[in-house]
Length: 88
Image (tube, rainbow, N blue to C red; front, side, top):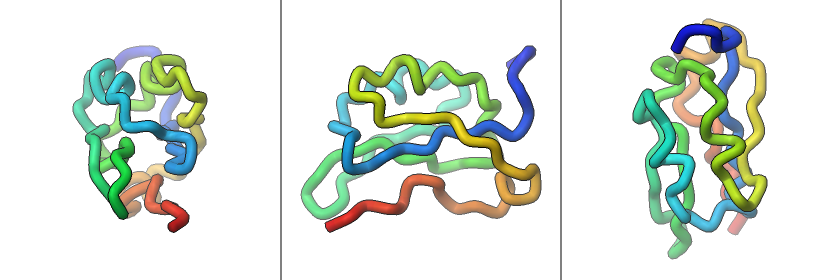
């Protein structure tokens, strides 16, 4: 998307995410998906390299579970997922 700062990606706090899907619905790049992990549904960034950093997901989350974070271009392409920290 034009006008988006380079190197921004959503950082999803799995402990706060309820899996409502609002972030997934507003993601124009289709890189956020809902997954079930340990019986809990939550959002996950699946394709970090394809994320444009548009910032639409963060304000769409009614639970404040998404913050945008800066990442290096190389890290964005290599990182498999920014939201794997699900605490059991």
